[in-house]
Amino acid sequence: MKLTTQGYIKIPIMFLEAESPAKVNIHIYMPLNRKVVSFRRKGEPLSLADVMTLTGLGASQALMLESEYAAALEELAGDVLAPESETTLGSHSQAVARVVIEQIANAKADQVTRRVTLDNAADLAKFVLTSMKGAPKSNYYQLILSELKNEDVFATHNRHVGALAALILMALGGYEKKDLTDITLAGFFHDAFLKDMPKAFQDKHLSGSDLSLEVLRAPELGYYRHIELVLKKFDDEKVGASASAMRVIVQHHENFDGSGLKGTRENAIYPPARILRIADDLICLMNCVGKEMTLQDAYARLCAVNSEGVRVIYDPELLAQLAPIFT
Image 1 (cartoon, rainbow, N blue to C red):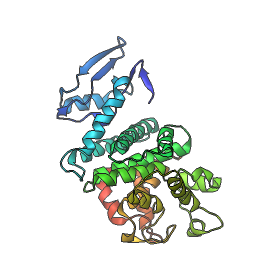
Image 2 (cartoon, helix red, strand yellow):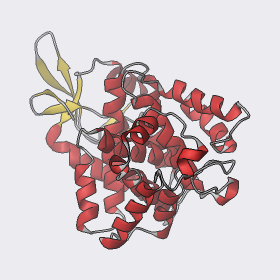
Image 3 (cartoon, rainbow, N blue to C red):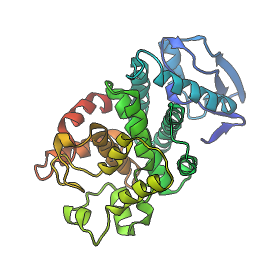
Image 4 (tube, helix red, strand yellow):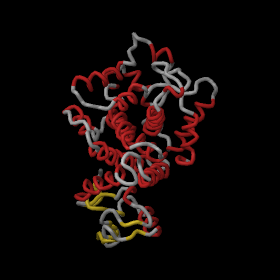
């Protein structure tokens, strides 16, 4: 995350929840006298007016100490996994997710703000993933997580897809905590070997272009191999990913009408895999260099593709559930 003033960073929107105690020490940079002043101490109440003031400030004005960022994320991750039930995600995780998705949507054409917000969400998802009891401990698992911050297109793609998929699942509600960690892991790893595919495949996928059924399934073209390589690496390195996480990875290129990679269709597609399918294509459309879309426009594009009557790629009911969240 880019430094705004020495020792401070722009405060992530997910730390700003109205009518609740401040999750971190909040500071404001005063550009006229070039000073950073304390706005709220951690634990002090944040009113709706406070949050509106902070979110309305310029890009480098609402700040927190960089040294406090990791601890704050860890605490927020604990909040997401903790309350209400031993297994089911609580209302707090839903509120956090909807605030962050709203920030992504409000970025409009501001690609930098959208990218930073997705990176913050990926940091939170990573803390949730690693804090779950029984999280994989293999060296390969740790290596991939450490490489998520790399600026190459594949690392960016994987961390943003993992983040958005996690946000969507939390925002929808009704899922278990293990579903959140499974979809996050799947998102972070799902295209880890896309870099080993022909460049034509890479470019088509990362631009959000649909691959034809012939290309998807042709054995000689080997597009399916990027999934098989992930599964093989997981097995070789004894990552210990759950069967559910593996299922999400296997099915992330399935289409609702059965026209996807393996021909799995409708309710036979694992629900979190349907979410990852949508998150994957949304990120492609939002991050395509030179053709970046807003979240609203990318979502509208997915709905339009589904309504063309040729191929039903995305779960129609899931798309409908996302309408009030994305628009």
